[in-house]
Length: 181
Ligand SMILES: CC(C)(COP(=O)(O)OP(=O)(O)OC[C@H]1O[C@@H](n2cnc3c(N)ncnc32)[C@H](O)[C@@H]1OP(=O)(O)O)[C@@H](O)C(=O)NCCC(=O)NCCS
Image (tube, rainbow, N blue to C red; front, side, top):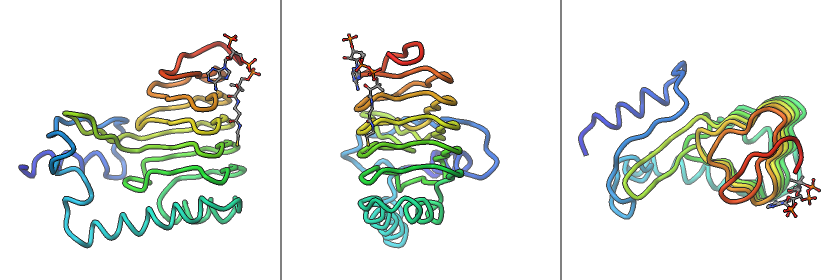
């Protein structure tokens, strides 16, 4: 794979880049795409594997302060008064693309993604949970999605679109409804 797509991704990942979503054509992800951490040598691979393991271990336990502290050290931006239930999952590939504002609740088993392989495309995205939103258990939040202030994401929702402030996203694929359903 030529260097060019990787340098485009590096520019997207750089601090100060204001774009929300990076998309690039890529081979089928069963082949080397050039975008996976495992395509960048042993050191790069070990770094992500170690981060993934630490995230997974700390998120297995119901010690919210410790979870928040470790995720912050790992790059996730987390505000004050955030509650992360045991069993939540945070994408270890680009943790610094995930931002969780103050007062957010994240249910058990919820998954917050910052990248996505598709059959012929790679994506990375800035995922933003605005102040006071509620993420139900086992919800899947795709990369580049923004959940608005005070919004609700129902349990097990597969969310690939933004949720406006105060609204509820529900189901798979998610539909957006006014207030609570
Ligand atoms: C979104 C939610 C808050 C709505 O609760 P509610 O206002 O009591 O809604 P109801 O249970 O009355 O359901 C209203 C409608 O939404 C549907 N619905 C509710 N939750 C749903 C879900 N997770 N997925 C799909 N449909 C759902 C119901 O089937 C019902 O549809 P209908 O009107 O066609 O019969 C709640 O369903 C939910 O998902 N809570 C998350 C709880 C959670 O995960 N907590 C964290 C655990 S650690």
